[in-house]
Length: 334
Image (cartoon, rainbow, N blue to C red; front, top):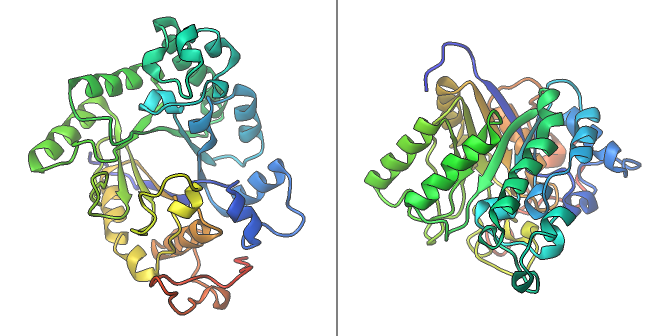
């Protein structure tokens, strides 16, 4: 993708409500305790956020109205698609009542429901729920993209490509972005070229990632723009927790980038900005205030409006036993 105008580069976090972020005392001031207050405060610090809750339950139109109302003009939400649309399962109680009513009785008693378990009218309803629920954000000019985060078992092949193609058609004109976790989509030079060519032909944004390498579900840190939007997500580089199960997501992504690691991505992001109209840079290392701290550092490194160098209260502590640097407790970044 080539553009003659300057890209809009937005840097932010993948959550504003993570329990460890709230509990850390390192971001929200004392007294900012309501849902409206937290979102309003966050939106005064960053221009973009990723909504994670919609992965666990379908998006809700009333809630989207509130998000639009509680944020300033120009603020952007990237919204995760519900689990069933990305090949994951969800417990039946996570479905809306209308969807629950369409789950066949034999499936309703199972621990998880998958998209394949729904009849055609159930899948159609699920797409409609997304279109309707996200309409308030689009109407307000605040919908960035719908993020499809696919699991390792979403394998490269005709059926999976057809699902991506269908997602783009069902949600048009909402932009969609896809992130792969293994699955053979980038297994070698040939498959990588085919994958990226396919996404570009469909106008679907490829999500570049920074994450631990060397695992079957690892995706290489490839900075590529396949649409007018480019997305970069930072998951941390904690190899010890990358594949843990049964613990909170914040434990899995417990990693604080240092400035040199963030600096590796500065030329990559600038390159994306030369090829795409918009670049979304999002930090998913949601452990305490790690994500918001790194987002502020990246903002500064990129020389964006609102960026500033790390202050004296953000200086690194000595490395811990696992080689990572822990932030001082109760750090206030403002």
